[in-house]
Length: 188
Image (cartoon, rainbow, N blue to C red; front, side, top):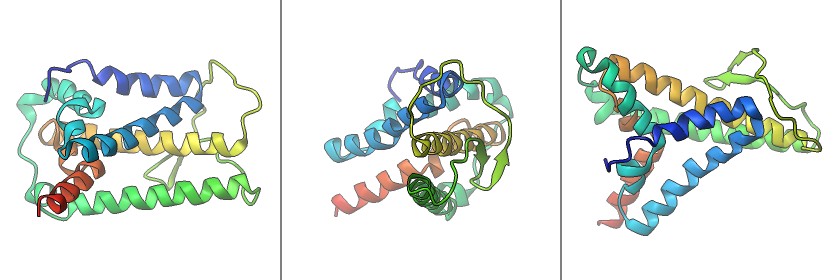
């Protein structure tokens, strides 16, 4: 990893910005699009190797737990767990997209609360320090859903860093899995 040891602050700012206004969660799309742009342009895992704020967070937090970690199981590094996470991520994006479309068309109300693992509601009101007026309900719905997905995957990564090695999440991260598949395909 490049010497970008303070990138973890971006992850912290992302979650803090949700308390300022949940609509800032939509900035998280950058962390989904930019890795793909860098992958296609550089034909390597540029994002994972040097720019991922979450990898920086896990590395930084891992310094606290370094003496308690052990090697991740093989089904994480070489097995099916990365495909389970990719399927979860894809399914989450599908649900987020479809529910946002339904909110936009008025078929369902906006869900203005967080969810863990897509199904467990967290009915804790997030303080909104700044209110934006005239924001469509579907945009608010999308922001909550996206914040929820980022919260879930970050929480899972934090658990993994304390149980295994700090960047164990990186072995099952959907962006890393897509990157590996892409690199394998273009190198043939």
